[in-house]
Image (cartoon, rainbow, N blue to C red; front, side, top):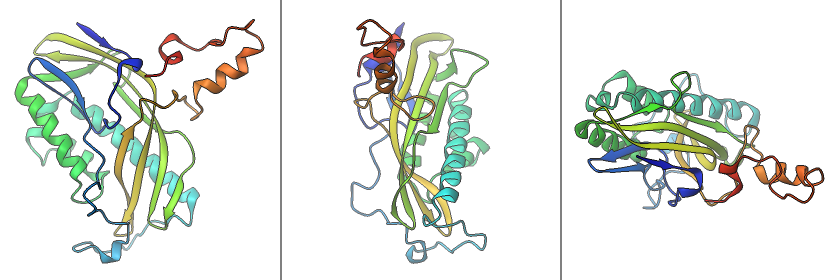
Length: 244
C-alpha cells in the first residue's frame, strides 16, 4: 500500500475529481479550462441560452459580497466532492442528487464537470472508491485562503488551500493512502446570468504550503527563527517543510 505525501505530488493541474483505474490510482482533476480560447469573460448578457436571474448577485464591484459568494461555492464544492468520493456509483446516474450538487457550483456547460464525471464513472466501473482516513472528518477540504483579485465586474481569481486525507479502495482492499496537507491553489469564479459560479480550480504543488488563514508556513518559520537557536524549520510539521 502506498502513501501519497504532500511532497510527492508532481503535476500542477489536478483537482476537480479524484479518480483511479484498475491497477493505477491517480488524481485526475483535468487541465485548466479555457486553453482553447473559447471561454467567456463573464459577460452573461451575451451568452446564448442564459437569461439574467431576477435575483442577480452583486458584481465584483462589491468585493465583500463576492467573497461571500466564493466561500459558499467552495463549501458547496467540498460537500459535493466528499459525497461523490464515498459513493462514486452515484455518478453513473447524471441526474443523481450528488451529481447535480457538484454541477450546481460550476458555470453552465462546464468542461471541468464533464471531465470530472468521466473520471468518477471510470472509478465506479472499476470498483474504486475512497473513504476518509478519519471517519469523523471529511476526506477533502477546500477553503478560500486570501483576498479576491478582480479581473472584471464578472470575473475574479482567488487563492485556495486544500487538504486530502483518504484511503483509496478497490473492492474492500486499501491500495493507497493519500495524505496532503496545506496544498496551495487558485481558482476562477465568473458571474453568468447574474449569479456566480466556479470556472476553474487548480492546485499549485510548487507553491509554499498554505495554512488555515491563507498564510504560508514559511511565514511561521520566519517567526520562529528567533526562538529556535538557528533551527530554520521552527515548529513546522515535517510534511510541510519540504516543497513538492
